[in-house]
Image (cartoon, rainbow, N blue to C red; front, side, top):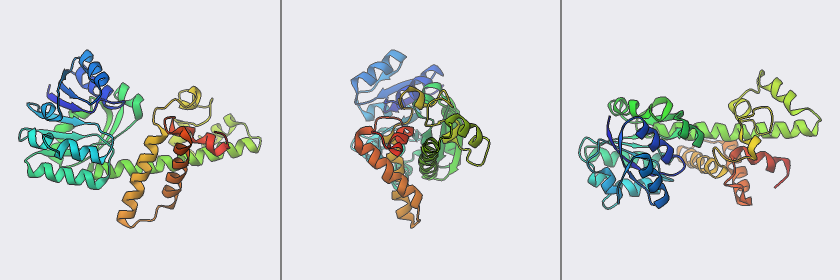
Length: 296
């Protein structure tokens, strides 16, 4: 078992850290939230007073942070991870951030003699709790081999996507598909309602036909056909509309930088922007069907 510094104990990082503790690792945990630190201590983690302290005397540092600016600050800021971690420490950032930030911080880490992986996740808070996340990992193969056993204690699927930044690229491309497909499924169910087609019948047909997709068969945005979907609990989130909007905006930033036209991705970002601006950012992203339907 390893000694791990864990930075960022929010809705995703908190349960991920607990799964590492359950697996027998020793954790030094840091977060700005006293409540998050108390929860980590109750689960068995020792507490660090600063980012630098969390990175000292550990074999691995894992972070789960809101955005690229936070990752740059935590790793590259004064008394940050890069200035305090011992040579040979493996750095794993599980945040979903822009590709440029991921590559820049990894390059700075390499200059310090440290191996860094970008390893964003898919699976939401439910997957974090159950340890069934999917990790999309960018970085050197040797570092990935070191990280894989630890990541498998937090997730079910761990894929080496390529060199530095490839994990972030995979995440934003995947979630662009997800955002577009959820809107398409929502539009289809609203149209079916207006045409008098029963939602269960549409589900049974499309689930076995060419319209089949994850947004339909696992996360159906109407109550009933998939009992475990958020639609059955008034769209209490597994993955919020705000989080989807963040990922869609990252995809559009990347598309513009690469000179790639993604009109459906742009449309999805605009629609989720409207949905969030109307006060629905904290609800599950599948709740956008309510806006499609014309409700609040």
